[in-house]
Length: 227
Image (cartoon, rainbow, N blue to C red; front, side, top):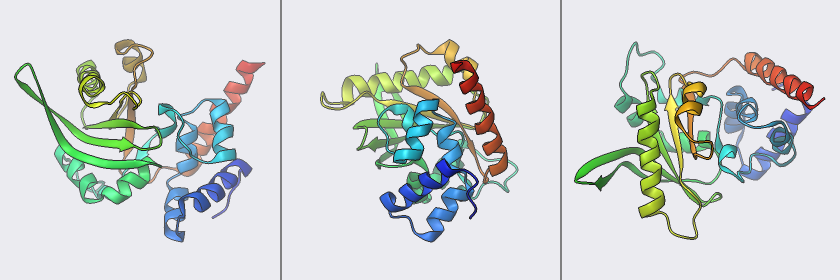
């Protein structure tokens, strides 16, 4: 593995030691462009912290990837699949899914049901992050993201914050894993302080050079804005 970027090399060195990665895991994380995907979900200062400290989550944005890579689900050769197929594949490969999500994640329940006003609602996956000390709710969306999807996740998050979370825990995080995200729709639908994120997933390893180019362009633009 050849590292063109010093920060990227420092990141993988720290993560290999801290997370006790074996060779296969290191190769998978490198070829799935973990550093670039984490960096593209952060601001400029957090990118520097990523290189210096590794991927240690301190706030909700620290657990986000752009995109998430679910190549282990084995669905990339299927012409079509349902949300339940993706969910089942993730459950079957839960260890790999938790590795993709990052540090501190624990699996609690699939299709978690809660009842409100005599109606039943189901959350695809309920996880807990012991480092952030909060619930993380995940819903899979293979169709176009809609404002109804965002509103539904907002309701799930509100329910967990009011009826599941204890006082010592931090606010619940909601993540919609979508085939195609729509940041403009998210910004328009949700309040600024919403702990809800829509992120794309891919069923194949991303083009590392393309992500490196995207990260460089974004950092260059950030530096121009600082001048």
